[in-house]
Image (cartoon, rainbow, N blue to C red):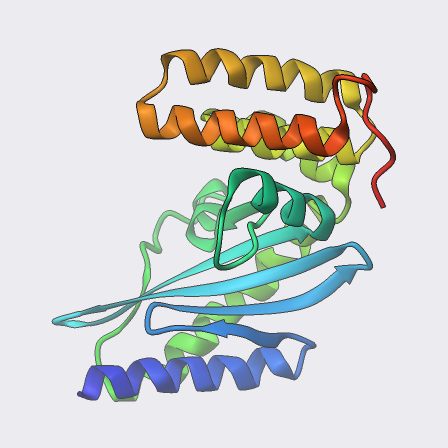
Amino acid sequence: MWLRAVTDRVVAEFSAMVGRRGWRLDFRSSELALFVRELQPDVDAELSLSLAEREWGLFINPVLSVRHKVVSDLFSRFIGGSGLPASTVGADLIGLLWTDGRTDKLAWMVEGPDDVSAVVADIWADLEQYGSSFYERHSSLPKMIGAMESLASDSVSWAHLAVAYMVAGQGERALSVLERLEDMAETGPPLMAEQTRRFVNSFRAYFDIANTAHGPDVE
């Protein structure tokens, strides 16, 4: 019982702290708190706390991400997803620290009610140091595409990149990715192959690929 109360208090204190800086709580469950603010008219900055309750206390994993609204909506539509909109690019805060050489920190943990305020303040201090540069590096679709290209590895990430290419007006690159996805569907596990084929078919139908090689303009 005390642990659930600690989790609620973490979210409440974090909400108050980021709320003063323009963030709003967009989604809350027992395992996730998602905060959003507009970065550009077509781009939302996202900040989430992944919350894992353990016997010894609460494990918190902050994640920074950006969501291009059109890309996210179309990707979710084509892939058949439900629930929260898909983030376009994201990174764990701990990964950003480690990349910067700060390997002394392993995680953010609350082991008792008295730890809450100090841990929330510690998370925000690291977010202030690393958040601005992350969001600036991914503040436009061309910048996001650069990150997506370096991270694409499975059918889902390639599918997301195909949508980003098309929305950015890079139809030839999008079609090249579709061909890759069709090849992946031939060799992938049945359920993943079915999802990939559904994505490709929905993508082609929406953009009328058979008739327009580069697809229509997307608003």
